Image (cartoon, rainbow, N blue to C red; front, side, top):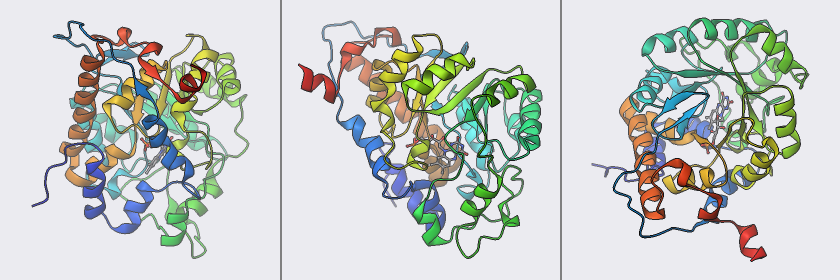
Length: 362
Ligand code: FMN
């Protein structure tokens, strides 16, 4: 019998065993040279932690809140497509595990179960991630339904005017099978031309004209707060504040879009400085350890999202696997806080980490 995973990264090997190669590669892969894919994780490894000792750490509180909604730790579930390829229960299992972990799941537009089904799966605070297709009516319809089903925020993904070039999917001729209920993703209807139907589908549906003024359009069709996911520069962070975003997510889409975009943790501070505390900053990409969560918070993020590890947990062990992944990260984060001398999130400060830049300047 395979040994039990002792950390989140070990779920990847289990998922690889459990999944057909084409699906594993779809989940694991990044764009082109996968430079950013590696750097998302390695950039965390270049940051060291400056612990404070002789602090009473007999009680540690990892809890926080996002947009006023309490969560048990600053670890949330990133929106990712097509969970049914990992497990027949798909997003229903992920939603239940997120709820049991007292955290917020952001449901992907490209979910294999629809917004109502996921809402009905269990009671929890959830956000809905939106892509905008040409014609806008699909987006408008889904936003309306998400709001009616009780989702608490819209996460507009802004880094996807076209699909990044994911060579593993092209090589594998990744074909998304007809799943039960994929509304945002009726990909069998396009001619893949012998390649990946994912790319053909996305490029024939995503609206490449989407621009800053469309945030006003989105605000006009929903009363929910809108977070912008995919911000990587202070210039865009400022614009996000200007257009009235309720928060930004520093993200390079798990390195699946623009290769050679920066590792997200390296630009968190730039974004945090730009928004000046007016709106929350969340970061995702490469979070694999509780120490990573600690580093992200020390650099000014309010929370992190976790993408691939959640899917690997789901593929390896279903709902239980997702729970385990979230719990492992939370336990590691709590231990990191204790060993660094922080008893609550407000104790975690910039001076608790040392980045490359700090090293060269001091
Ligand atoms: N981001 C979206 O905004 N919408 C999606 O539908 C979506 N699908 C994804 C599917 C997969 C298989 C993966 C790996 C990522 C996807 N993402 C999507 C990006 C994630 O939300 C997140 O930004 C990324 O996974 C974080 O990096 P990590 O996987 O290293 O944790």
